[in-house]
Length: 158
Image 1 (cartoon, rainbow, N blue to C red):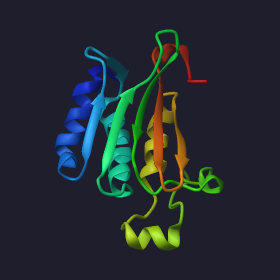
Image 2 (cartoon, one colour):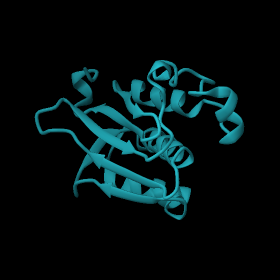
Image 3 (spheres, rainbow, N blue to C red):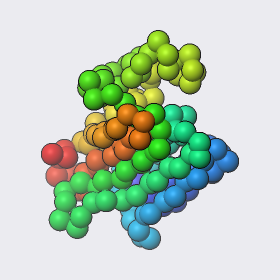
């Protein structure tokens, strides 16, 4: 664990992954925002979500990353929204399971995915006492939100 700049972490993920070449990535992260966590694991979770957001978006690919937690919330909330294909409501409960894709027969071939990144990202957040939630509308896009305790000694995010 270490205290690290969320903005710098996200900028590093975007730069290292070359994501700006594939999509318009707009960030709205407050200056000075820090997380007290494992920067490598949280960066890995952000990278997985950003990679998926870009892979499943439709041109023109537009990704938005923002911080939405209130001052009184016990958890940080970092969201990543895409303008992609969306996920059917009846499949939302399975996407964090290993080797699962929303439509595995079509998506694994079309997008060259095997279905591990969301499972690993969710595990990283759970190791920190947090989790990832998702909201999605088919043909409009998805929003994945990382929930991470602000005070790691306080326990898990509700």
